Image (cartoon, rainbow, N blue to C red; front, side, top):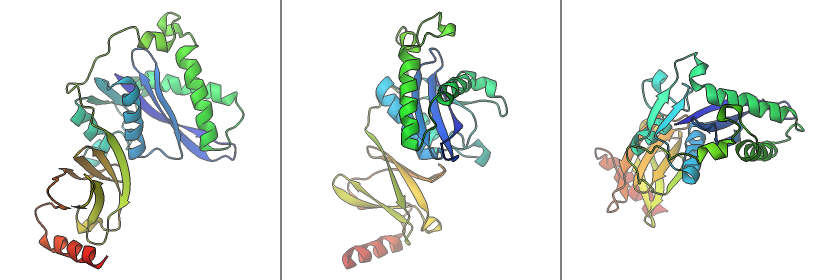
Length: 259
């Protein structure tokens, strides 16, 4: 099981930034520690996939109820939850106002802040990331951990066989793309060397969106992670329509002809 949470830090100029941390529940091994101006849904998902690419997928994923992790407050599921469902990773959330549930990552926040407080104040996100990378290397591989009987997190992490998701073997290449819905309620995506038009609805025109692409499987979400549309691309169609809005296809065809 992995634990995930973000915490705040200040740069040298006093501006507030966020650090997203992922730790392994058993070994306290730091899987990721990444600085962002503000952690958004796409950032949380991209950090998860980057960690999974290096260490494999966990069986469970535990977080608090922050908007990038949970859509419960909006009676839905955010992008990260949807992807965990697809992968067979059990998604767990702490009880509201009970940080002890995610106590290991919360404790990790404290440890990393003690280290950062001893460094020169970071001048930028990139500078802070260098400090985080240095800390992560020392924490994982050099610093004995009292709760691990003096072993390092790296030693504890590699000492046992890991649990895996209920749907193992999903190794489809994953990428994220940002776009803005056009006036016809459509976004475009290059798939199998052709530009495809995906209809999401006129209600979303001019709205920034994030596309989460896993092979032919596409999820389209708002910038804060709320799902708009999910589909499997049909390689035989240029226009990936919902219940067919012929008017939209015609308009897109006219626009393509004009351009």
